[in-house]
Amino acid sequence: MATTLKNLSEYSDKNIADVAGKRFAIVVAEWNAQVTEALFEGAHRTLLKEGAQAENIIRKNVPGSFELTLGAQWVAERADIDAVICLGCVIQGETRHFDFICNAVAHGLTDVGLKFNKPVIFGVLTPNTLEQALDRAGGRHGNKGDEAAVTAIKMLGF
Ligand code: DLZ
Figure 1: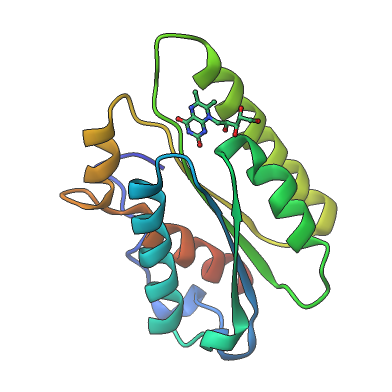
Figure 2: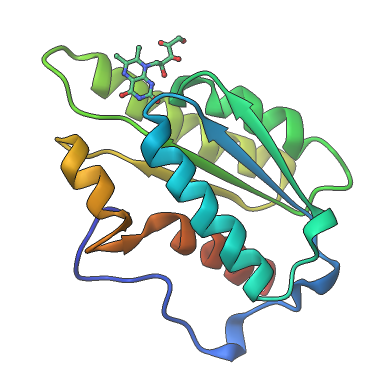
């Protein structure tokens, strides 16, 4: 996700779903809110730009990235949700907390997608510094929230 070389926001029309009737849930972690709000703005703006209806996009907040998994499960189990976009930012610290959170969320979101057979997108930044995070949340490396939204749309067009 956090690469400067590959931009998932670039796509051709052929693998883009007709999103007008699709319903999205965006789950946002409140930790590092400066970053996750920017990711949300990017994801939300991209969904609208690609044709999603504002009333078909719901937002749910969770305290931290660790809680994204359960938040994703709560919305994924809803029959009226087609895809779930999870947004968080875990910044490397001096302890192993970072590894535990990142591994748990990556595995947890994978499991939720497989359990409910619908796209659950891992839009979690895992930078070393806040500056690196901001670079990827509307800064010089784009906005990974945009990419997360495009990934959801691509998966709906599978
Ligand atoms: C505790 C914690 C720490 C140290 N760092 C972050 C972080 O960088 N990003 C993030 O999203 N959440 C962090 N958290 C909170 C955990 O995700 C979680 O909310 C708590 O461990 C409670 O389960």
